Length: 178
Image (cartoon, rainbow, N blue to C red):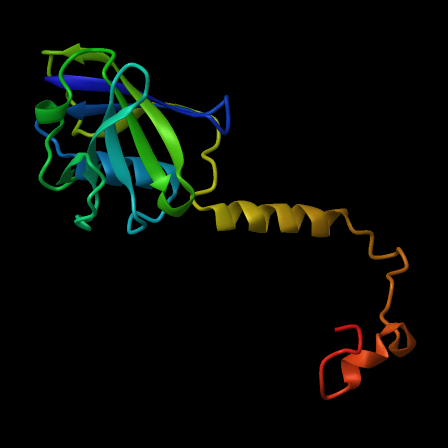
């Protein structure tokens, strides 16, 4: 069975990916294909979560089993085939790609077909928009670069002068204000 997943981001309304995968493929293959398409580092922690229609997590499919007791059934991406965990159209998943900041993509199975594809699966069939940066650190660096780009080098920069410093800073003990 061939599956077509739609992938969207709540960070960028323009971002869409449609990924085609065979039911016998694993979530690890899904992960690697998506990471490659987005230009992400596939060694970063990530997890798929099978959800209900309200996007509430029901089962975790993780890159690395860290044996944390999250209260959810957990299997590794390498062990989990698509067909064993996703069956009906409109089945929803969350893909956590920035694990430490809980940044996610939302995925939905939009079509299934018994017709085989002539391409090797999995593959991205359609893409629109730029992928958000993989890690929050990347976002912070982008913001810092944008701020630095806004600084006019011709503009006079404030310089720190010795007389502007608090003289208590130079004492060996605590400042006298404390």
